[in-house]
Every structure is written in structure tokens, then in C-alpha cells.
Amino acid sequence: MSKLQGNAAEDRACRYLEEQGLRLLCRNYHSRRGELDIVMQDGNTVVCIEVKYRKQTRFGRAVEFVTAKKLQRIKAAFEFYLLDNGLNSASTPLRIDVIAIDGQSLEWLKNVG
Image 1: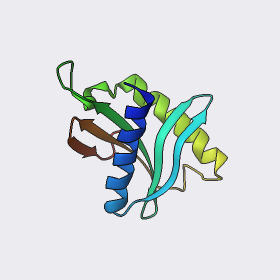
Image 2: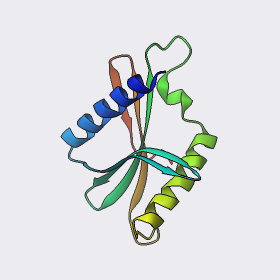
Image 3: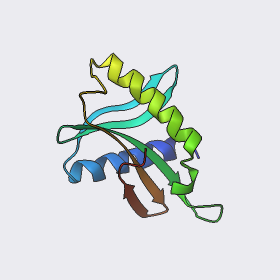
Image 4: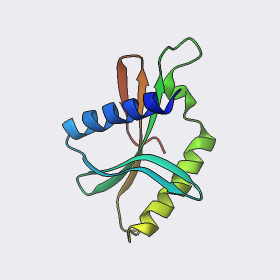
């Protein structure tokens, strides 16, 4: 997948989530432990969103590419994001969601991690 396709998928995910009432906090956060695609606020909950896009499902659906190992890396990077932003994971409600886009179909999976 090209960077352009990835950015377009993230743009679409952001628009969709904002329509659902979430507020964008950060995109493409980088730390030494990994990258977070999107970080948003849902009420008082800070939500890390992993965006997976597949043009076709011939080799599997987008959601199938969010593995346990990938979730571990997301959690580690999320901890760095919280530290960088002065948030305490013990007192801040947190959630990890996935936006899976297969062609034109978009699926929002909440609290996967």
C-alpha cells in the first residue's frame, strides 16, 4: 500500500470518527516503540485508533492484519504518547480501537486491546 493510500484511509477514518462525535488529538504519533495512526478523544476517554486498509480482500480482510504482536506495539507506543502529553494511564480512561477499511466498506471495532 502506498503512503498516499494510507493517508487517504486515515483521512476517511478521521472524518468518520469525527462524525461519530470524537475529537482529533493527534495523527501519526511516533515514538521509539512505534507509531500511532490516530489519537482521539471520545468523551473523557483517550482513544488510540489503528487504521487498516485493504483494497481487496483476496488475501484477507483488513481487520485480520491487526495481530496480537501489533497490539503490543500499539500499547507500548500509546504509553509513550500518554507520558509525552502528561496523562496518567491509571487515572485516564483509555481505549484501543481499529478502523478496518476493505475497499469501500468501513468497520469500527471498539476496545480491541
